[in-house]
Amino acid sequence: MLERSLAVKSSSTKPIWKSLIADSITRLDQLAKNFEIDLHQLAPVVRNFPIRITPYYLSLIKQPHDPLWRQVIPDLAELTDTVTTKDPLCEEESSPVPGLIHRYPDRVVLLVSEQCAVHCRFCMRKRRVGIAAHEDLLGAGLEYIRQTPQIHEVILSGGDPLMLDDEPLARILNEIRQCNHVRVIRIHSRMPCTLPHRITDDFTKMLRDFSPVYLNIHFNHPDEITQQSAHACNQLADAGIPIGSQTVLLKGVNDDEETMHRLMEKLLHNRVRPYYLHQLDRVQGTGHFHVPVSTGLHIMDRLRGWLSGMAVPNYMVDLPGGGGKVPLTPQYIIRKEARCWHIKNFEGRMFSYPISSHNLP
Ligand SMILES: *Cc1c(COP(=O)(O)O)cnc(C)c1O
Image (cartoon, rainbow, N blue to C red; front, side, top):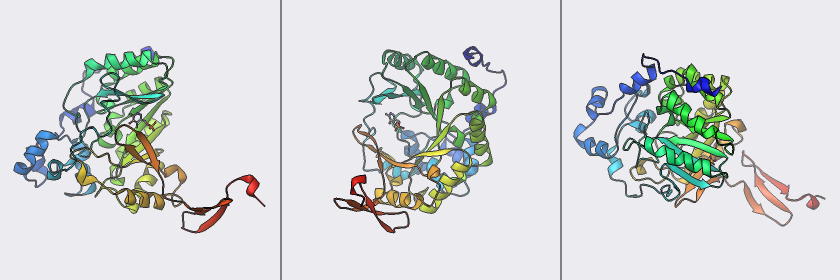
């Protein structure tokens, strides 16, 4: 079974997804052909934080400043952010070896690629994406995983792991599968959203061979769920690969209940289970996307109960300084008494709830 995956031949003709990456927009003058932008003003922004947009994702933008535009087109505000932390989660300090983050007892993040198909302007790893190459460091991370039996799950991230060809990706998955203590492999990718052509038959088959592999994808707006991306998700689901989705709460993109409701519903229809709604990490150059936590909690309040429970993600903050992720929920417990708590339901109606069975009459 593994031999078959490892033998995936890179065919002589370039797969479509690779041509689309080669045709991506990486310069302001290319962007200026499509939109009216101020080349002179934006040049320093792009020097700090490079652009990358697939022709596919570009085609989904309906007009300047719409929710998809905001995610990928550079903004002057990236340079005027008052926050100067590049690594607020102190990932570098939680790295026992370069390219691997070990924060929680039983799982690690392995950064397998520095590249992404699209550079999100709000990226949490803005400090590294698109800047350095990384392949040589992978050996140290894999060795750490081999030597650390407490690790039960390996999360491939980056960059985007799906920027790798099937063959090197299969080699990494195979290395991880050689460690008996690793049970689950999780891959974090935005490709089903930014370049769904990446989800080929060969790729899907390859993933299935390393089961259990979970795929966590990343959608921020209902307009990103096109026929093509829906097809990619359904193809993965047909192959038995469980798919979760992460969304980042972003100003001007999805910071209202109606958009979030449509997004979560549409994901669920495509057999994608919303997993986390992330509060934006305070990374330098992303301040203009910041949404107050109170707005996030309000949106959660309007999802829970109004939408299938399967479509309601957990709203997470990642504590600065490497404290890890914590869920925030709207306040449902309004008052606590010795015997009973007064709890609000999704419609705001109050109920008394006996808090332990011996309090029952
Ligand atoms: C988010 C994250 C994980 C995964 O956390 P889950 O709650 O299991 O999804 C693991 N390691 C690091 C460093 C993370 O930031």
